[in-house]
Image (cartoon, rainbow, N blue to C red; front, side, top):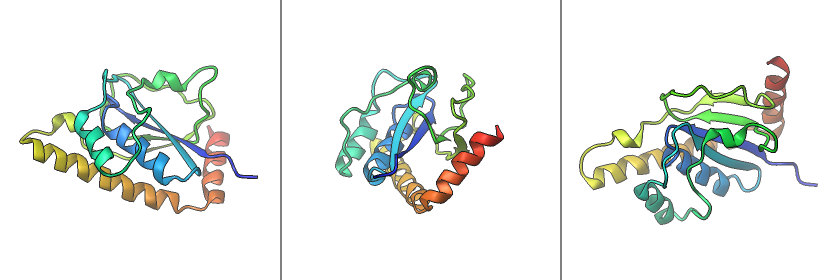
Length: 159
């Protein structure tokens, strides 16, 4: 019997670029061992078109990707989370004490809204974030399942 996937939530401000990139990377490269979601505290109405294009050009599935508010991940019926990774320094709304006390950590990346310059410069910056997320997740995913379970369980019992 296959082990259940580790559920990861990525938090960013608008959930239109960084979180979406991270969600796509994990859901594709996690090969069923990891399942990712993303959310923001001020979600945009639509995905960043440059981020979406970069994902498509890089071969990532984009069906179902859309900005979401983190409140979708608390309360009855919410997906149980094992890990919550914060992608930005921005804080306007304090996230809750997550149900189940998932392990939390910062995976900080620059805010795409702050990128200025020509279109190619913005594409380059978002492509660099995608590459960095791929490398960071690759390293994280190399941890043995037992170590990930132990971290998750330890966190749940110490909070």
